[in-house]
Image (cartoon, rainbow, N blue to C red):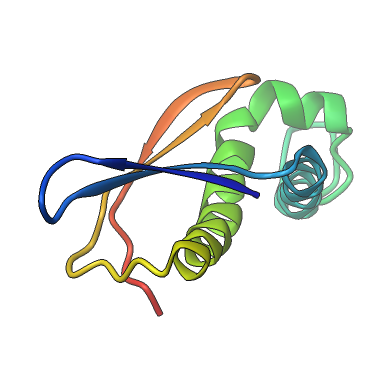
Length: 110
């Protein structure tokens, strides 16, 4: 994991976090598997929709699943690595070469 810190003011920091490709690829695979198990399309039984159809019809669901599962873990690791303690919820944006930016809701640190 690579973490860059940009100082925006006396009490503001911007973290730019880059995770290893293997970790991101594994998260995408797991998200595809989870969505595939629940996917329903006419002509296919539940959970039996081919991956190519999942990519075509459920891309947003997979993207949201990756964001929901991967980002909180990576964010916690980055905070622990940099020893930064946020005082209020933050806005997060997922950026990847394979997809557009996906704005995410602020999330509490648990």
